[in-house]
Image 1: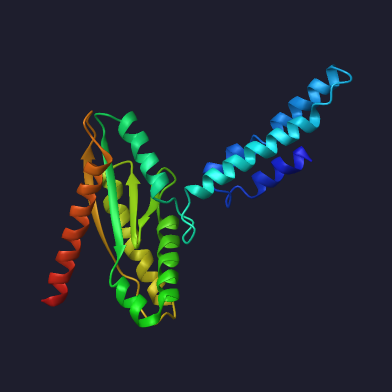
Image 2 (image 1 turned 90 degrees about the vertical axis):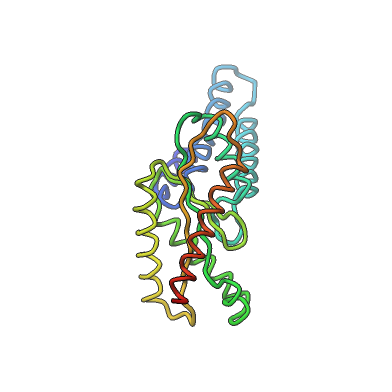
Length: 223
């Protein structure tokens, strides 16, 4: 049974969220410890206690993951994003934090014209494109509404990612049969972390960059 759990995890590693893979891989260890204690101390039944302990820990982990996962897009939600940024700010003082903020253009028009189901589908599609476009060490979360935040390792990665996102969204639009086109605005900021840095400061930088991008896009469209 324990071998089957381990084999099943490795077989499906590509679809198991990386935050859950190692905690779930831990599952057989308490059971194994219970078996060893029972083996060397005759009369003490600890195997089932190990099973119960494993199930309890796995359940706690899955509940914690559900609390920090956006139910619609399956991306990390604002709670996990805040936790991740606090960890980076506390750990990486003196380093530079690169962030992108993106939102869907004319999202209200999609909702009002085609219905809220179409709006949900647009969010799900864009989230899937974003998730498949980032690197292994990058982080993307649904910030709220139709806004998404990316945290990257290097400023050069940001420019490359923006081009990749635009290319992947254009490819999606080309092959989709949707009555609307997915388009998004994105702003990028390079934020140097200091001892006085806060989440609000970082988010203010991101907001300013994204709305500058939206204003520029509107001016280009009008002209």
